[in-house]
Length: 181
Ligand SMILES: CC(C)(COP(=O)(O)OP(=O)(O)OC[C@H]1O[C@@H](n2cnc3c(N)ncnc32)[C@H](O)[C@@H]1OP(=O)(O)O)[C@@H](O)C(=O)NCCC(=O)NCCS
Image 1: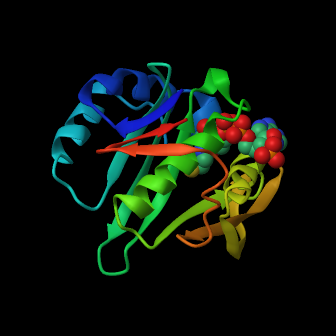
Image 2 (image 1 turned 90 degrees about the horizontal axis):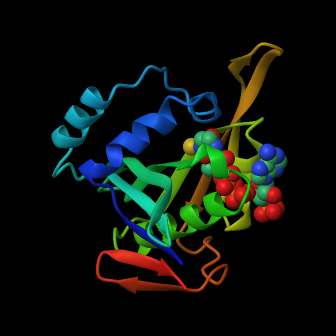
């Protein structure tokens, strides 16, 4: 069983471990090393910050992904999505379920109208994960990201509440948490 809940201080050690893993940071445009001390400061500074929501996903009580929305604009009711799956468990369907639960949370509890993300054109898993549950490519930023092989494109992907394939997975909303049945 998968459960989405809000990020807690206790989750940060694992978050830092994942963020310093090249299988995570290479597609996410942040620069390691990420320290636990600075991440704890970041967490405390963001308590009560309504412009972001950070979550974890548990599978049978074990954290398997972290997810969130940043830059939430209350007037436009939109926010930017990020998703990180435990690097040892990529490609097992966790990312798709995580993005789905976060999207349900955003639309049903966070009352957002739109979720969006920039995704590098070679991040196939991320693009497929988004498309599987209804996100659409809204635009392509050409030759925006550098790789050893040269410049590649970056996609702007978006999802409105009506786009989300709500029947992709069965779920239940319980207070501030969502369970994948
Ligand atoms: C991107 C990420 C979140 C995807 O999560 P995941 O659990 O690995 O992905 P899933 O297992 O749910 O797979 C999603 C889709 O991609 C496909 N896929 C997974 N890994 C793939 C790979 N290496 N190459 C091609 N396709 C892949 C799956 O088959 C699935 O497609 P389908 O629905 O058509 O079967 C995860 O790989 C990750 O954390 N990457 C590092 C951080 C990152 O890049 N985050 C996204 C940017 S914000």
